[in-house]
Image: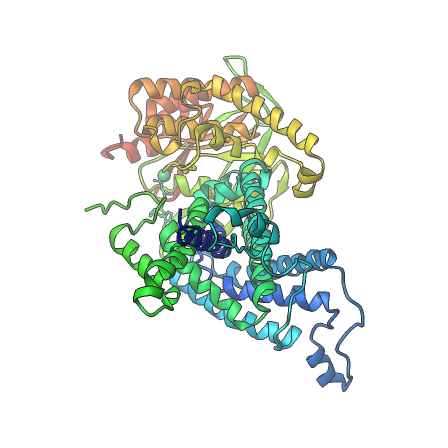
Length: 332
Length: 271
Ligand SMILES: Nc1ncnc2c1ncn2[C@@H]1O[C@H](COP(=O)(O)OP(=O)(O)O)[C@@H](O)[C@H]1O
Ligand SMILES: [Mg+2]
């Protein structure tokens, strides 16, 4: 095989890694959508907010410092300590659970039975609110997020794969961060599936996703399940936010990865967890390979910006139920 | 028959004191009065039927008992205490299970999984306990599985245990829904037209199951049924509703000879 082939493989592998992130964000959407029929536009902002919270807690920043200083004329910014990463992650999860509870309590509890478009509008409001709230709580500077994962390519893989492609090939270049992200995502997904399949709350979650009335009749509190899925979505957002933030810094563009999750959902279906994962990987690989094979050589590059949407559009036309959804049959 | 204390029926079952009492219930939907000032009680261990023509308000009454509808007026008394306004899931957790006229099952789950959800109110291990103390959770799962298998045997649905409910015919769905309700080991079971849309054989099976549940577990049962013959065979006492009002209440014999009931049923096409 020629070196070109192995560079193609490398592009494929890197695409998989990018896909993991898309899959994570899409997973957050699916969790909430399945259980409550809410299309959560705020999922991307939740990832941003979660990463921002984690970065700020690690740095020992005082929450609402600006507000406190403006009100009391003080000049405080930091506690003057650094919080260990693990503890900071636990605290951040706590913040996301509190957020989930508040969202259910203050917003969606009052919108039960409303049309999907109303619920969707509410999540748009929520997205902008959360963005502003994040600013107010932690400030708007771009933060670096260092959770101790070594940056740069993985040397071991590079050295041990160099022999494959002859003299022109120097081994696969794969980012350490991406490898960690992929592993964390795999563990997370396995954990979620086990939780949904075997725990009491998981069974209740599946019940609510299937039929609200029946769920109530067997003693399931919809309120509780909704807080639970928003918490899980918050947790998934945290993982996605951390992985992205560690790579590119915690900044507003993070909330835009949510837009990449949309084509993933078109592909995987809005209610399928395997769909979100496979869809994410396909989009990730697809856009990288397309750029490498077609985009860069023939179309002047930058096809990654639109490739996913074109694929989504094709799916909308030819297979609107997505890869794993059941065939939609119009009753006449 | 006597009012307080317990009664032994002709077939040897024990019927205890009043366990649930509806007092002057009125339920309106906008201008429609679905239930108008109705009172009746349910005694422990009895099979209590609610009958009446279509639109009489029977399902509404069951929905009030199970917390799905909140009446504008009236009180619900349960085990000698006035029940505060409750959500349906809270009522279920008090040991009151139900089925629906239009079947509400988890279509995407297997029969076994559907029935397992009926055990949710019985599962104690909390979220954290399950993660930390896996042994206890597993023990509980095994207990629950045993209870569910017993119900599956009892209702003779072994052959469809692993079938997704969405693929089952109507009659079997009704049976699975009953199984799920039974899985909660309820003290009161509410059945909304458990035999609607069934053929004669299926109706006979269902009648037998209802009688057996009541007999073996002493479960109190309130059921809505259209088929007069079935009702007369099954129930200890009958409430008759028409246009949201109660027009009769008593033993099957008393009700059968009640002129208001006869009038309500004359000329009303009921299936
Ligand atoms: N959720 C509801 N919203 C509006 N009207 C209802 C609702 N449920 C029942 N009704 C009305 O209440 C009346 C009684 O209905 P129902 O209790 O279903 O009767 P039955 O079960 O005896 O056939 C009917 O007129 C019905 O249209
Ligand atoms: Mg009815």
